[in-house]
Image 1 (cartoon, rainbow, N blue to C red):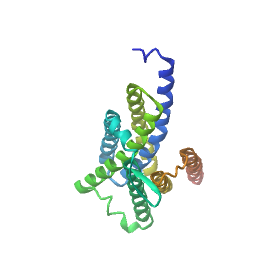
Image 2 (cartoon, rainbow, N blue to C red):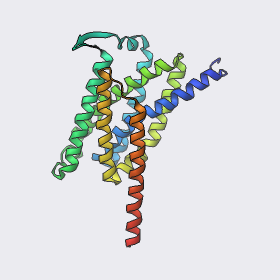
Image 3 (cartoon, rainbow, N blue to C red):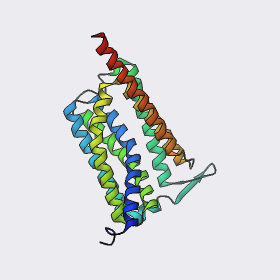
Image 4 (cartoon, one colour):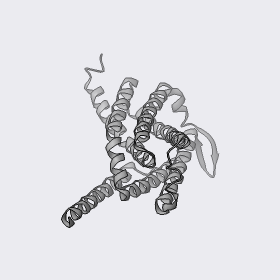
Length: 240
């Protein structure tokens, strides 16, 4: 009850929730891209499963704080760098994102690949879920370690994570539909996935790229693309 009446607790909740929402942008972009190649009915189900898993992984990681904090302890050294389990997970997740985004960009450029991975079926659905699980673990780890560094009460951490995941769920549908309807935005989203993957790999090598730069680039490019889509729509109306 003391948390409900504490201004410091509410300030921490607001700050942490805002940060978790920003960190969740990566998750939403990945989901939007990956569901664009499967039928709409399956896409809705995949979004629900993906965001539910994101919430579950975050709460599980919060429940094992001692183990999680231990992930930042070095386990071996190589080339003058000390690597922890967190570093290895970030590097692996970043390489996975880069490989996945590059594969999707190739499929977009080469129209002959359209009937490949995106074909409906149980195997395609299962493969999409596996990819979401992998990337959810990576993003959840980064998100929860940030939460541990900003808040001291686990109740505040869990509340912030739940609120952020609900907002991610609400926004994922419109974002996914917009990406599916406008191919140029999908290519832009894939380019951002490559950028995010590079940032994760850099973090794994203890070279931190401020996320503010990345999110500013995403926001600026998204604004430009929005006006580009609006201009195309207006030109079509004028032509009719």
